[in-house]
Image (cartoon, rainbow, N blue to C red; front, side):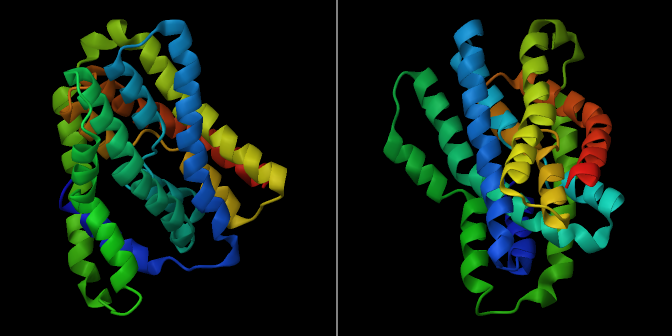
Length: 268
């Protein structure tokens, strides 16, 4: 997490092209994040979740696996030439994870311990290596061309997916499905159906179309963020759910992304 994610920011942020159409892939991850908060708030009114389960459902549901699953899926469905459209959604998702996601997790951890030290939360956020790398990439890439290091950064980025999946696999407890099935169903339903539906509805409402719109909706349909699940799990916020929702979400997501591909091709 502390090596591959900073490398990801340094590698792809300089490739973002700032145009007037960028607002849609910039706003969409915030829509998914905000929708997750509202979904969990409504769900919690019925189920009365613990702080750990509520935070896990919110954070993991609000962030998609837009890099390690999203990029290969976009390449397979749309072609490698369209990958640049996905970088914006991916990096905004990452920035939400490194700021709002980290704050939500630290706040829940503090709440469970009985005291919330917001100064400590803020301090930990500023020291979070992926966030530092994102800010550095935004600032430095405008003045310095370090594309000569891309091959090295690619190798670092490539270590994230297998290590993350290995970590999830170590924690995966299939026997816990019966205990977590309601939460698991809610998390997968939001991330694979409701979240992309929100982004699709926004695109349809404002008349956005073309490759950028299609890939933005497609990115919103990705399964839950692997690294977010690791962060949530490391802070002991329902680790059983964290591993289950990522594991089953990836498998089910292979089916639902095919459906969403057909939808965006037909409608956008």
